[in-house]
Image (cartoon, rainbow, N blue to C red):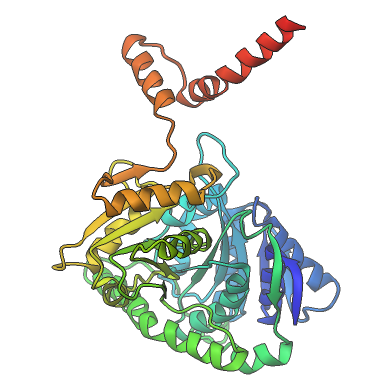
Amino acid sequence: MLKQTEGSQAVAEAVALSRPEVVCAYPITPQTHIVEGVGALVKAGTLKNCEFINVESEFAALSVAIGSSAAGARTYTATASQGLLFMAEAVYNAAGLGLPIVMTVGNRAIGAPINIWNDQTDSMALKDSGWIQLHAETNQEAADLHIQAFRLAEMLSCPVMVCMDGFILTHAYERVDIPTQEEVDAFLPPFEPVQVVDPAEPYSIGAMVGPDAFTEVRYLAHHKQLRALDLIPEIAEDFEARFGRKSGGLIHPYRTEDAETIVVALGSVNGTIKDVIDAMRDDGHKIGCVAVCSFRPFPLEALRDALHDALRIVCVEKSLAIGIGGVLASAVRMSLRRLYREVFTVVAGLGGRPITRASLRDVFERAEAEMLDDVTFLDLNWEVVNAHLARAREVRKSGPIAENILKAMHADEGADIEEAEAGE
């Protein structure tokens, strides 16, 4: 059923349609509306046979999820930003134990300084924890990916994160097609766990493993992700056949035929990128893009095939690997081994900074003209940065960076106010 709804509410309804038996909830912006929405459905009796558990922290939320999943219950939770980092130990435990938990990450910047707006630093910080990571471009895809995620997690007995950009998706209202309970039941079979803690047949989980077996255990976690490279597109194809729309899969190429420049990105920014590509195509530029849906496992071969004929690749990244540049670009370079293509990193949208079509077009045209640096910071205010660096060289006690930058950014505003007041 098509309805105009908030992204968080669409996800809450999709999660409820997947019939979780335990939902562990702790609020943190911008995912709070999701667990509130699921809680309201439990309270109203729309979602039956589900225990909604309010906990005291994000660490507790995933710890309870680990317990409920180990006991054989279909389990869901959600988090964002500092909350994901707070539960980091449990994130690794859930993956190491092979528990099929589904968790939404409402992508948000990581402090310090404090910032509640969107970028993808949080999920990138836990990219190697053993969780599958799926990134949604739209709210429709975000809702659809949760239904697919439960099936994928339970087929592999492996946890899955569904990442959706905070505010840009979680708080945006748009049309979303919400399926019926019968449709989801036909697509998602009842949960049959491969491991269950049972007092009648006791055994240990999370036991000590020494050097003699640890590598083998870790390899088998890696092997699950390799299997996911086949299962993710299979599940997406079945979803399309049943629901009549494409969602999920490994990658989404767009206008890549004959493209000399291809842009690669994760999440909602792909919508803006497509608008820029359409405009540039109209002006004769040979450019396309690829949206990566499955970041873990990373689709090396699928991406290699999509990028094979391009002359250059521009990775637009909403995170920064401090000291090297781009996380996504590093993975893209791996997919292009022995092809020797130029791969550029454009760091954009950190802390929620707007990513405009004009700015994107500028960097894409500079890439075409071979004028783009290996790492570019979109719309960086070099005047403010250089002023701070000069101050730091001259004054030992130069003060905290964040506060100095804010003061410099708003210095002109203060001067304008003083000038106006003087005129009065």
